[in-house]
Image (cartoon, rainbow, N blue to C red; front, side):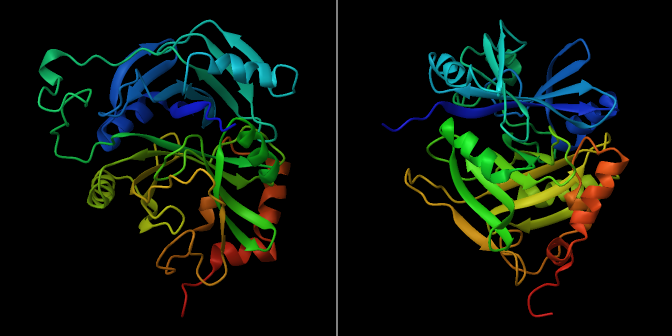
Amino acid sequence: MSEILLSQLAHVELFSPKPEETVAWLKDIFGLEETTREGQSVYLRGWAEWLHSSLIVTEAKESGVGRIGWRTYGAEDPETIAKRLQDSEEHVGWVDDWTGHGRTYQYRSAFGRHLHEVFWDVDLYEAPEDKKDHAVPNRPQKIPTNGGSAVRYLDHVTMPSANMKGDIEFYKKLGARHTAATEVEPGFSVFSTLTCNGIRSTHDIALVPDFSGVTGRAHHIAFRVDQRVDVERMAEIAVSHGTPIELGPGVHGIDEITYLYLREPGGFRMEVNSGGWVNSMPDWEPKTYQAAGGNPGQSIYRNVAMPESFYEAWPLPPKEAAEKEQEAVNSEQLADFFQQKPQGV
């Protein structure tokens, strides 16, 4: 029997030591819209998202990611997932309701130990009359006319894991498809992508290795725009407003998406992307990219060297763990990975 339990990545909670600056940046640069505020959290959404919110910015001492929320495919699916995990170490428990959605089951990933939650009942965004798009009613509101490239919706979250293969198998138990991986040498994967549902032009989960021994860390959160030119426009907006670019714009070989990576004021990495191919094959076998020769998974043109800063994830590990992680990054395999020259140079 085929099974799809999750319909979409619904929201991610971003921890920020500078919440007001982070929220202002997300509004000004990404074009996110504020839905509501509650306690230490601000709820935001992309202009084309029907759900109440997709990014929750919560004040914290360190940058990182908290709750990762998924809407299920049907009303009974949260119970199905709960029964599947209730006697495992991944089980956390039920929450009666959260801002933006109803009764929720929480669990942690097997090795990364990231906090996930699944739910069916949701609050939908209701635009004020002057923002409703009566010409295109399948949109929750009109396209913003602020002259920028406002993000459309939440796309994916990337998380470190001390056991990528183990976490891939865990996510597959909940119906995810493993779609691709990048190896620095056979058997040594440094990147993997998964999708929770049947048809995706890109991934909603990505995994990278964690060498620190610290769990629950996050690498980046990605939002989507309509076209490649919107990614390029976002790069110009960021630079003109004093936000340096960490990597991009470019095109990933994996999923063929145009990407741009930036740091928000709290220090966390954010991505904007567009495009990608539609993978609708239910029996898709994951493809493996070899990083040697220009890392086609990172750049389809094989002409981009990844900055060493790109291995950073949050929260930053304590001193001994950070030294352990740096030692791993400086190992022969990963040193070549981060410092490789473009093909033909």
